[in-house]
Length: 236
Ligand code: OAD
Image (cartoon, rainbow, N blue to C red):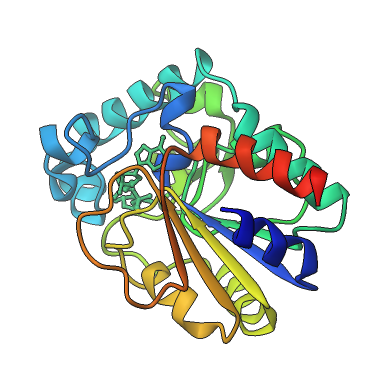
């Protein structure tokens, strides 16, 4: 870990890439761990374009439950450390697969949400924006009565182009990429670290497969590991 802290202090352009494991210590389940969402339900049935078109009530309920769960959760110290590192000039961008908005809420400004944000809603038919309250109240679009949906990327959809391009360019510039709490199973985000010629660090609670592409693998929880790294960076 000391070496990673040294790399962080010395790097001129550092990108953080986060996944659902970044937020489990805030109380949100991830997707593929034993208590993760996709262990209980088939994402194709609830989080896909097919579900939006053919199974709308269950689709809407799934996202309502996830939005309600967020009301009881807060970003944790690890999120705040990343925001503080940005202020100190140690981190240039946080690219996240998370839709919980916790990086913004904890004060990070340079954030790319590659899978969208669950707090904003739009009409699937005319794309007009709607409020989260309208979605929770099960209203149709106020303009065309179309189906409201959160602005998240569903299975079967492309990533938002601008977000993707920004993350890609940042990876290409990075001297250091720190990947935190993602199983790296989802394309195309799992390709991003390999687009960098910089040092690659992987922080994850469970690492069962060898991660040959990474220069350092830290097996540990996101919050604890970031607290330890922050203490080391502070001392270096
Ligand atoms: P996953 O659930 O696939 O992976 C989360 C990873 O974080 C797992 O490897 C866990 O072991 C690890 N983990 C859990 N808690 C942790 C902690 N406290 N500290 C460190 N690591 C921890 O979630 P993602 O990789 O983010 O997409 O999933 C990618 C995408 O798949 C999601 O954005 C979502 C999902 O389908 C969409 O919905 C479009």
